[in-house]
Length: 216
Image 1 (tube, helix red, strand yellow):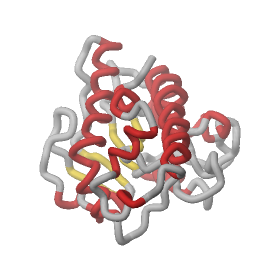
Image 2 (image 1 turned 90 degrees about the vertical axis):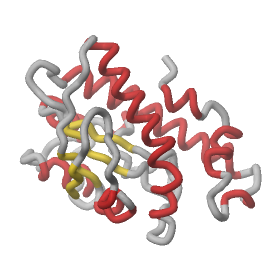
Image 3 (image 1 turned 30 degrees about the horizontal axis):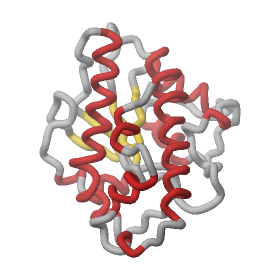
């Protein structure tokens, strides 16, 4: 089944168009866009199918747990591909957590009072899901290097468009599955990078709540 972010970006040409108004990207040659789109498609499919549908929806208990959102940017940038640090890659499911390489996942577990030592990535994601914690990549920049100079630009460009469409698609998937609107915790956790890029001043509703943002 095609997810809603895939319906927004179906081809490498669509992917290029999503970046065209950003400074510097209009001059990038056609050689790179199919490669970047391949990365985007790989990571986004892993997030939707392996993590969200297979792990989160199968382990979260709608009747007993609110959803606690945790927002991240996207898969880490630079080579190799697939990136060895991506926590939603199904090929890493059985790997033991590495405190340095998987620092974002470790920070999320600690934020929600869950120990991480001696656990695999899949065990960690399942335990988060049982506790209602949903971790979301909100940018389509999978595999791209995001520098401190362009983080605010990316936030301004993507958050109220691509990111909100992805969040709406997630909300609709949950509603259609359970025929019930999910309760979203008003405290939304996020990476320090997203917080400093714009979430610290963000006042709009996300899902059905006016959020208070806290860093993991």
